[in-house]
Image (cartoon, rainbow, N blue to C red; front, side):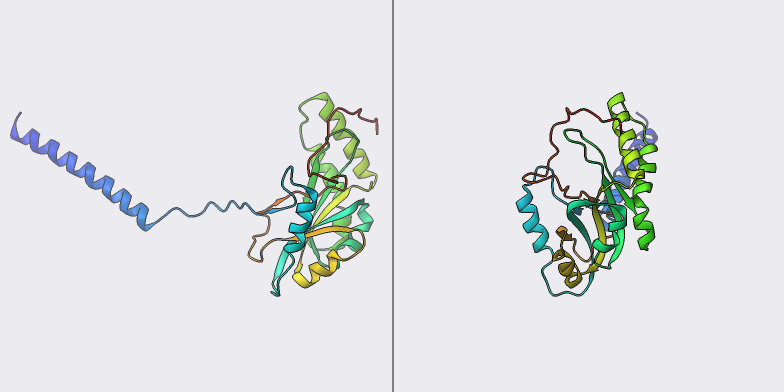
Length: 221
């Protein structure tokens, strides 16, 4: 092999090794930024004993800090839209979760993100109905469940099962002590808005946070 060709191959190999080393160094000096995906969650874990969640929620309100916290408010019984402001403790409502309960039928929980103001919170059930209509049911049963849910939400049913509010721990503790409030769970003060999951504790969850069977008949309305 001619010397020139050998030298050329050696130069290419050295350059390739040098490029690989450069990539490694750049990765060490400039690590990838976090994706921004958060594992924060408001509400019980699937299958979590309700008693355990209630203790966990209560413990989340302890502490002397005066920062604002995002918190999930769950109720002893679902609310009508007009009852929402009275169950917020006067705090800023950031989201409302709605669920049309039908015995032995799995129905969706729809959470509506809200701007400030009680009027938009009261109107959130209608917004939830529109969100359901925008979905594309996979089968006839799902389609019928959607139709019933939309009709009841638009009729102002008692279907509000959770609110996300923002307030100081002292305010959240006061809210948790009000009649009709089953639990208030706060996130750490550094939690980022809209980057956490919201899974309300449904009033029908008595022992375990888990849906029951899905073999019931779907009513016409």
